[in-house]
Length: 259
Image (cartoon, rainbow, N blue to C red; front, side, top):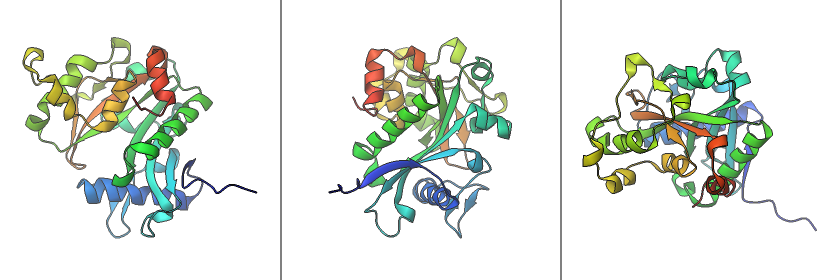
């Protein structure tokens, strides 16, 4: 007697239809919910795309019982780009925003993460747990040593974001060998509130859940933010060095980012 397949499961996109389903979910979250726009947004087809999509692995979270309006049941997406894939394009996606020279010169195996999103009902709980577990398996399979990628605050009002950005700068700035920096043309300092004047509790409450998850794992941020007016976000670069993760951090990672 065979058991019923799980309602929620993850897989890597295998077909063009899988990728289209991921792009439709990104449209739902980034465009419809968060107000993003840009040259890769197709409002007629309701797709959020860019030129990097063909080179990334797209990690999908699928709900077999998702409503019929959810394309192919895809309710969560993580976009993954290894160094060997980036070499085919000539750059990582986040190099449009950050100078990654220090990471690329390290000789270590890199993995760029991006375009992470889930439908509201799947944020936290089992959905995020499955996504983290799948990511951990991917990292182990490809012997990844350093994970990095852009994560976003909603909005571009720096005054409103001054406290959480300053908290990241004062408490979670990457060590020198990992400290990427916003490209000079777009460099936005994050040191907007003096350390002595910072209300750390309220500042941390304003940090998005995804960024908090990486900080719990021992992650860092690069130097400077990037204000993305097209996407209506303020971006920071997160870096996670697997060699620097202590036993507690590794335990959290193996449990899917939960604490």
